[in-house]
Image (cartoon, rainbow, N blue to C red; front, side, top):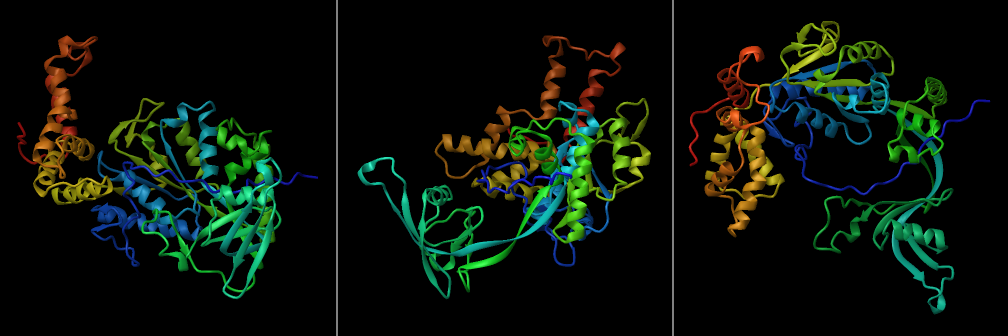
Length: 484
């Protein structure tokens, strides 16, 4: 008799929010007709690329067609990763979205094809349905009685829950009290308690308690007080990935292996058993397959072996939608002596839908910098932002974005409230961009160790390298910049 695969229990994890390069992205900024708004949800410009990504979103949501692949190609700093992040945000947390860099697979302690297989199975979710008895209500009062004399006796308490139609008091034991304290449950929270396992889940705050506090965190969610009976039968849905099921059924430590990251290579027999069981659950109506997205950035870093694997994997009926991104032109295909567009073989490119991104205009760059200032909570004068926009056009958008926080620190140092032109100038003199740094190295190349820039057997002259570096750093040069 075949063993039933173990399914990991879903757990709520406290989110740690930090400002990242794409933390301002909230979606693709499309309307209901899949038309891209000029500025929306953190996205600016790239109208055609976002419109095309919206069409791919519809394919992903319907989940009927497997093996579709998309390539986002464009110059550095034109929003390729931002579009992929926008797709992830638009799909929501229920659709698996796996991000991978092309160079990552070479640093893992497993074969390249195994690393890609695990990435594929991370991107395929299984939505498992089960009916369970729960208690759902709004917390009226939590009363915990401490043991007499301060000893280590058993804790006791009472929990008062209510719905719109009834109110009941429950006696609490030690396990339930610990569960309530762990979830930080207080009066006004709407909670559910699984009668079988005793698991407590906090759904949010009741709308009737919305005015209890002057300020709330961004993660605070308000919900209506439940209706009807406190005890009810409810269909609970767990979404787990095929990879998570593979890991807990192939390792003795089970669920802990997911956190340890020590997944290792997984035997094909384990995957076959998981696939067979999931197919049975689908036929019985207990589970659904949720095809997700596998995003591989810097895809030109893969070699011919990986490309051959992807060619075959895309033909699988359970393959997720693949999204690739690259900033390369015609270059050598890794693992061969041949060149190809974007460093990829023609037979794989033939399977892809290709989206091209375009350099941002000066107006779009200004809007992006304005959004980043809001995201990083930096007050900046119009003149300073105009200068920063010129710097971005002269050097690169990424360099200008890095200057926002550093300029705000310089401003705080002089006890200013708004970043001004003098702060931008100060930071510009402190930190070099690629073009100035390259020019400096060429001028002082003989002072550096192992300098190999003199031409001859190394091919390029100092002048040609300087010209190439300048052209790459300034995609849309907009005149001379003077900040001295």
